[in-house]
Image (cartoon, rainbow, N blue to C red; front, side, top):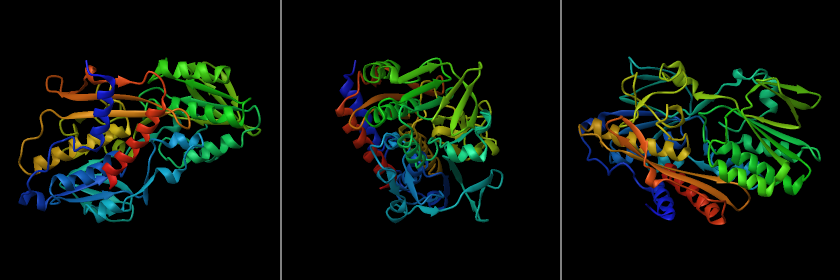
Length: 428
């Protein structure tokens, strides 16, 4: 069996390596082809960069992304805990255009037409494509929780699951909470983006409150039967550091939110109600609206089925889907690292196909997630997922999985290095 350190170092190395084969010599087909990439997150930005790199800059690649800069959701719980600023998580997109020749359209996609191979933008223009890569992330189903979709609660209850800048608003609410107040969180049923992140957020909040508001309480209500990731580690940490000031309640499904006299009420499926001064409701998730409306989300109407050899949609030709929007393979998390890995496999497959070469028959994806649980400690979970030609999906390689025993300062340092490494891999 591999040593734990070997597994972790291997996963860290995979963040910055090519991970999908070397550059493919150009052909006339590559020079004439145009790939449109929708979404500039961990999947989309990586795909745009690697499509150019793997084609020796012969492919024309256009990235459609409305934001001025990339802001990382991983590490944003450090902002909730007052340990980082949003500016620390922000990276400019300019290097993709200046260094790699990616064309960048600061716009949003309104629709796409698979028959005409065109993408329609909100500025009234359209792009035609030979291949379309969709990496749009997720949508939050606020309508699943009564009251959460109202303007009042949209404005006063930031979620912080699609917009990392909302983490600063959650921290500001914690800082303004009265002495001895209550911070409550609700977690939806899996699957969800970044399974450890809700518990990381609760821990960051509890860590900050222990110093600045020691009589306050953190209440976590989880629709799932248990903590979704690193369960024993989180339970042990909470018991040893926070005692009764952090309570975890499994199998509590939030169905309604009400604002009443300056406080919030979260109501649950079996009739229970909790009152909180600060409330963070994380609603159920699905693939982003653009792929649902476009007919790509055929798995329970929520997620996109893909061919894991190429990340091509199983229902729409010449369209590929990456990241959190896909129907995941067994034990494959929805994470930033995994989206980065999807992008490399996809980019290599597109370049090979357009160049008339065989696609890699054995792609591999490496996952690595860090949970930052204080101002200087973190935990990690790492693993390898390899394509199985018999089952035609990615399967975990159990001998190459690893999880922290407890939080350490070394993992905090590794986690910060991972962030800098993957941001550079995407955007530098």
